Image (tube, rainbow, N blue to C red):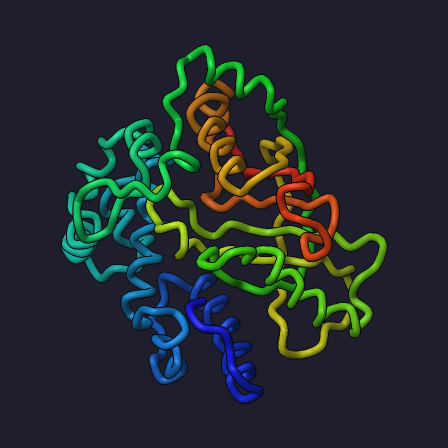
Length: 303
């Protein structure tokens, strides 16, 4: 978010806006009523139309890379455009190349040079010294993947309450979990069995880091009646590749890149969903992010 709420009335608007953002995320292919989004531009920094189109195009950019069998016609349908020609025009305007040309750009090139900068048609270096230093030899890549101890497990699924936010400010993750905790604790929703999870809704391959959205989640038991005013969803169960991380957010991204460059290509699996999630060993609101052990889960299916 670009501006914090300044008073009680704006805090109420802010809560409603988070609900709208979550609704858009779940319905990217649907038409939206702009009447419900009056204060959107002020807080998000984009018009609702710009925001929705950007999310659709960035999501389909992931699909084009992950699923070579996906046709341009299917991509246009999945991205919510009225026709393949409209999709191709919008994609080229945003990324500077056609979808087919984009598909041919190697992920190795993207990861070494940085985020693909929208509307310019060239690569933009977010922070190459920290985030994009992926000039690894095959031996180094093999060693890094081996050290990650990647395995495949069955995730049981979780019912969660959640709050969506962006990585556009320092300490965005612990701050969002702190806000969520302050809401949940007085309502008796925190127990010794509570799990703290975040879902990265965007990846900084095609999305500027500050615009990458994440969903802070707190698990709640089945059958618990939830008060109004908080989003709830189910993190579905299923087969996941999993490995542990500790340290900075940038270090976690680097391991995700190594996972995509190495293990997944030789595993017999492919990534099933573009959004993975991580489970924290403790509440991220209570300890510095870099000190917390996290377990990454990435949904997979047979290749």
